[in-house]
Length: 156
Image (cartoon, rainbow, N blue to C red):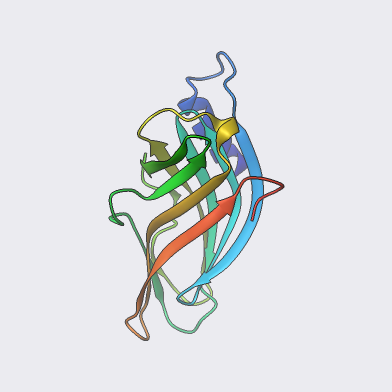
């Protein structure tokens, strides 16, 4: 996963040229949404985007579906000294994060989000993501995946 983050950062920053400020925080945040366990290991903020390193696990006896995208006008926002700024999908999530997740199945991936305007990574204190929904196939219940992450003092 570290190689994926490094490759995405290099591509977003234009290769190995002049160093740009990057904030990389191990947040280790865990949450359960509609029977699906979600672990966010790290958040990387750079001027051109936000990378969220996720692992999802279905501990239940029924399939779940992680439906990414199409969740309002944005898929998240970041808190800065200038207020909240919306972020949007830059690319489809890296890895096989979304879709049907069978009982006992674990998946990892990176959600890459792009801001409408360039960010000052050092001023970002919180990241809120709401990239989609979790469907519980046993109940038919659909629940918004929404998580607020602090980037101060090691996260969550």
